[in-house]
Image 1 (tube, rainbow, N blue to C red):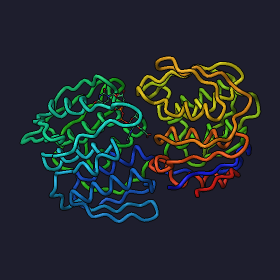
Image 2: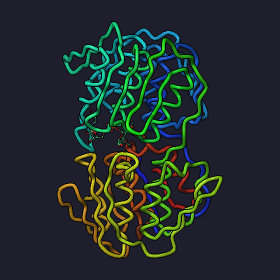
Image 3: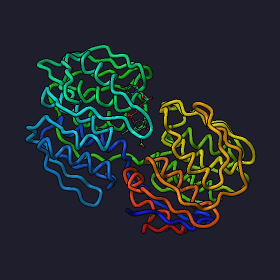
Image 4: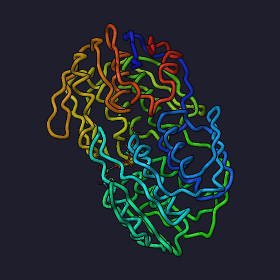
Length: 414
Ligand code: EPU
């Protein structure tokens, strides 16, 4: 099995161009089912999770060609509404296919996604939303069987501001007769990107402050579209610059998508500057301790919690990081402790007493973002860090070691 070997202690320096957003690509690829014909989607990251979504789309009947970050996908003939366990079990977001199939075929037979390393991740909000739109839901043998003859607009209030829940309801409701209003919706940049794509195909969706209003349309047209930059990857690199005392320039990233992380980095003592071509992140001073609490957008993203936790292990004092979104998203902590970090867990909070340096060790990635946190810790640590199970990291970061190497890191995949 492949692993990363990192010789730490080198500041990241230079300029890097990042990839398109994984979490925008997944719902947008599913959304291509709603408009029969050929779509051309640019800036699609070549990642494990994207490849899984492409396999799922092919299983429904789509024809795809994926080269140089452009996916040409023909969804003219979609005949299969069954998505087997084998395809859904490796990625929670596979369940986005349910909303797209309901919209396209009026039926979906999709395996219920299981729990995962970061928590139980229920789908009750997705299913309640489908039912409100007139979809009959039955569950048997681990499969959700969704059928409808007539999608009708509805008022939907989400108990949790679920990202894929909001996206699934959007996918299922674009053709629903009349108006659908989704309140307490997720406002993450990837949800907004999906709305832009659907509107570019002819949907009538307005995202207001408190709710999304969807005016049902009769059909959509296939489109050429460019996926937005990945703010989770950008945030990871910004924290990488901070943890190594580096000075990097991130090209073609969107400031407005990273506001909460930029605010925290500035509070910690990192210089973050906007430029018309991107963002510069530089740290010369000590790392100040702080408190971080994850929350749905525009709060601090849970997908950057492990990385900022790694950064705060080197702060000059005690920091508190509280994870409010996922009950088990602290799997990186025992691994960071192996590298010399001093962290105590109290329920959903990590109490981090800053140390002067981390030391290289053998550690294991348990999910995408926990793996990224260990890479960042390894880049700053004294000595050699070996990270195993990097297939988790590959699900969400494209060519991470190549991009880091261009910034001067010593990282090898062996
Ligand atoms: N929730 C419910 N019921 C539901 C759905 C969600 O109670 O029906 C709860 C969850 O248990 C959680 C909260 O709502 O406490 C938020 O979960 P959400 O549904 O928003 O998570 P998700 O849609 O499954 C997406 C991202 C995750 C990211 C979360 C939170 C995609 C493909 N995945 O997951 O990304 O952590 O939103 O922002 O967009 C990653 O990229 O590494 C990743 C895990």
